[in-house]
Image (cartoon, rainbow, N blue to C red; front, top):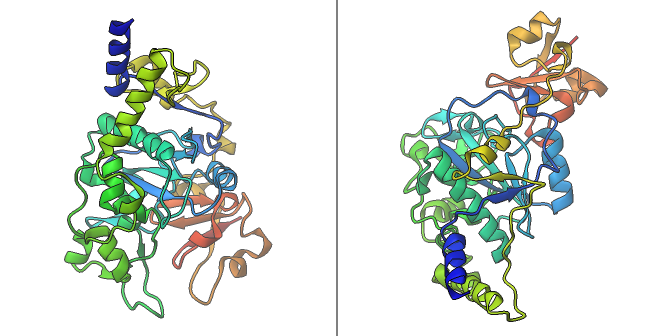
Length: 345
């Protein structure tokens, strides 16, 4: 029994077990999302809203690849190799539209509040699996605040970093230590190159300085918390009533594991192909070929509703920006920005 316990302990602590991923909130937008050409970043977000409403919105609009709840449940939203619309107006090292080369993970919670260890462990396990799959180093696991930028406005005269504080806590050393991330981005390459200016100095000090408001919420040595899990497991194996929070893979769920190729295929399920007329257009050329015309562009004085009226959020209205085509029934009103084209028949 002692030998069995040690073998099981090694398996659990080495990460050999697959990570359960639920398809309950898999987005119906999957068939219309193209496969990404490259994956260079993992972007961590905070939902800034409760679990249920967040999952419903993410599912409806396909705005993340995964969502991790406070209970540690991982939901797949958009298949990991496809484009999810999670970063909005974004730039990283001179490259705009971060959606095109990143995986987005939404974490139920808020940018300025500590998360529980159950959720932190689930985020850590998911991130580590994705890092292994895509060979992403620690310093390229970033938060939304690292990549989001704002357009000029009445407060900021230039393109600026500081549009979002989303996911800000994931830049803090104490949280990154819990996630097993030894490095973080050293500086903002886009600010250094003067492509952007700093629009939020406090955020800059969080992302690249020493501000860490979460350090009192987590043990200084992450192995302490992990050791408590191991101790609980040994107690369970001895027959003690205390059971650890160890989940066995559920046969009814897809699993994400770099050590189990047959299960890995489940990460990108083959969607049922809809009729061509039902698949939303993916380019301006395709919009034109289907008879859509540009009715106007959103500006400071011209809103989407002024251009499209009550059809601004119709499934037959499309928005274009930075080579993206976004159906009106999935558009987030807060993400309608200046320069977006509005297409209608």
